Amino acid sequence: MASRSSDTDSPAGVGSYLRPRPRPTLVVVSGPPGSGKSTTARRIADRSCLPVISRDALKGGICFTHGQVPADIAALTAERFRTTLVELATAGVSLVAEWALHRATASQLLPLLGGVAELRLVQCTAPREVLLDRVRARLADDPGTRWPFPDERVLADLADGSFPLAEFTPADAAPATLVVDTSGPGEVDLDPILRFCFAADRPVTDGRAADGPPEGRS
Image (cartoon, rainbow, N blue to C red; front, side, top):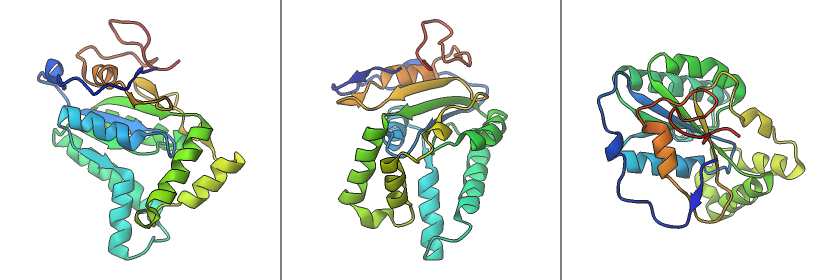
């Protein structure tokens, strides 16, 4: 697990990880609703000067164009998201991708992305009670900006225990994975996440760094 810190991030950024790379790096930040994946993705991108491609943002853009949530929004968003990531990676652009990755989707999409980029999967997690509190707070704080998203249904499913949290765990065929618990006080310490994502030595698939102790799945 990545550790946590209430202190501000060091100013080092990713300078020590800058090097020519044979392929672009694609950092996939995933997790269930309320797990902190959007915040984590933005922080990684800010420190590394990489663009963030958010599946929810693409969904919002599609819905805005239609003036409503289209009946086939899931298929539309999945296709636009897939083609955007593949096109950017094929063009040599390293980036951070943020979306609630289902195991079934992972088994289809991750091998495709792994063919065009060096993948790192950062899996955000938190107890169900924390997810519930965060989704509830998000609805209360600014519900008008969330109109394309089924937050109320997610909230109800989290509350009654029917939300399929197991579907958001890393797939068996996932690339090297770092599990990040976001439930504690303060911000998650970003330095071990940056090391996992950008260090020269590629971690093996069980989440162990090539030159160190386990820092991924547990």
